[in-house]
Amino acid sequence: MQLVVGRIGRAHGIKGEVSIEVRTDEPELRLGPGAVLATDPAGAGPLTIETGRVHSGRLLLRFAGVKDRTAAEALRNILLIAEVDPEEGPEDPEEFYDHQLIDLDVVTVDGEEIGRITEIAHLPAQDLFIVERPDGAEVMIPFVEEIVTEIDLERQRAVIDPPPGLINSAEAVVASAREAEGADPADATGEKADTADTTGEKGDA
Image 1 (cartoon, rainbow, N blue to C red):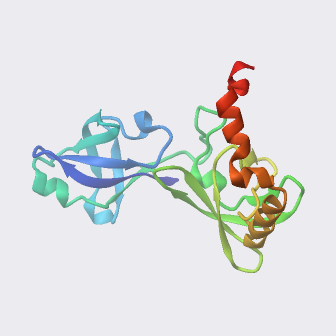
Image 2 (image 1 turned 180 degrees about the vertical axis):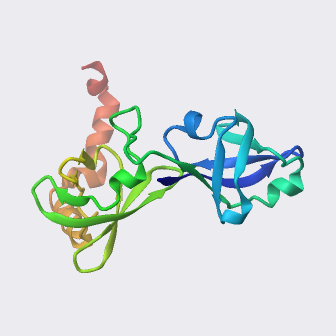
């Protein structure tokens, strides 16, 4: 099975290095020197990694035969693809490959059926599940432990505990209204905060 493990970014320096947008949880394994990767578009590859290093938090690679900045710039936006055994999983049991997550059913902790994962979006800040709802609409769910409480590969489902508004925007409006109704009028004047700051009672406690 082929998996996208990275995307080539800008050229770095003048000796053929390129920055890499990493799309694998195991860059040391998939993007190490000596690795031979297929590409998308296919005509750009295969590419053999010659050297790799981390600079200012970014992975920099140099590929065999790419000797200068011009050649490196020509590779920009090309996807890097590794051949992976479909039965293989990450070493960390809390991590998953994209192909393990695609097509999982998504349900809430209360048992409500949300839809099916059709895509994993890898963003700089976090990964997102792209979930197709039964009516054809799509919803994006951050793949973070506060929201995705369980991945059950045996039952082929992802269990989520979504905050108000993530699935249904109307819920966010209702939640905001409730918070406004329950607000302490004194909070609006700042009187409570002023009293606490003046006396220092909170800090002493």
